[in-house]
Image (cartoon, rainbow, N blue to C red; front, side):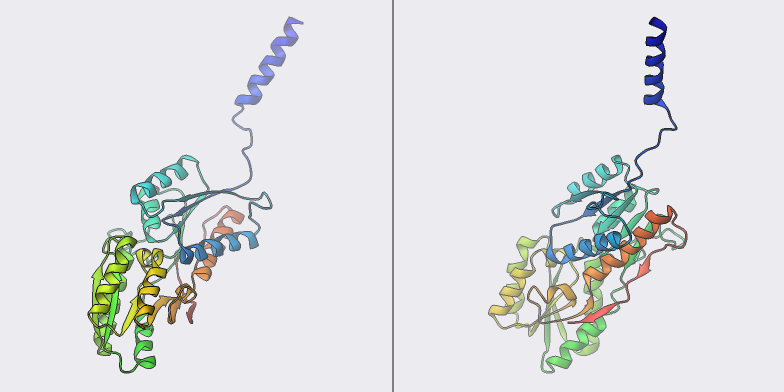
Length: 298
């Protein structure tokens, strides 16, 4: 009886510590979101819809999702990224730019699938030889479409002379977009009035100040501060009958008059297709950051 007890105990210990014991086959995806926003949420939905079509969803118990939203706070974003890494996720999805930059700064091993982000070069993520990080995938934009967005102003309102915009100087993509719209306004003979903002609580006062300067058009840049407070921007402009143009298709449903640019849902979907391929094949072969090419006029 004593020998039987020892055998049972040894069997139990071996089964608990056996290094060849298989881990769960269900992949774990970490999703790192910067803030709660209706426009950015479309990209997230597209990402998970693509995963579901590829055979990975929590509903079917074929995927585990760990979602973290920093609510617009950068220290919280860093903590959220650290948590995802501690959970040993199979990949990290990032939305938008600051989430992508944070994840790449924190890990060189776990694949990062970006969306609503600029090119690795514009995000200052490339190395000295101009190579993108080896663990960065997903879909990016170059802002080249802003020239068409600005051209639409003159097409629809040929008498317009002054355009107003706001941008967050702390966001690389926002600064790049501001520089691009400034260049295009100069080419089109439009005067650009701009004001920097640090957070969404400053947008109403900034927009009102631009209106007081006599702007004919307000242009909503691809900027997280703009996304987070767009209803306030649209309402302030609407009260003074100032049309709102934008390069982000999702903002039309929220009050913009015209957009020419990226569809957020499709952006996330294309990134999700890459992530699904990785989860299926367990390989990153053939994957690389891709330029978002599907642009819409709304």
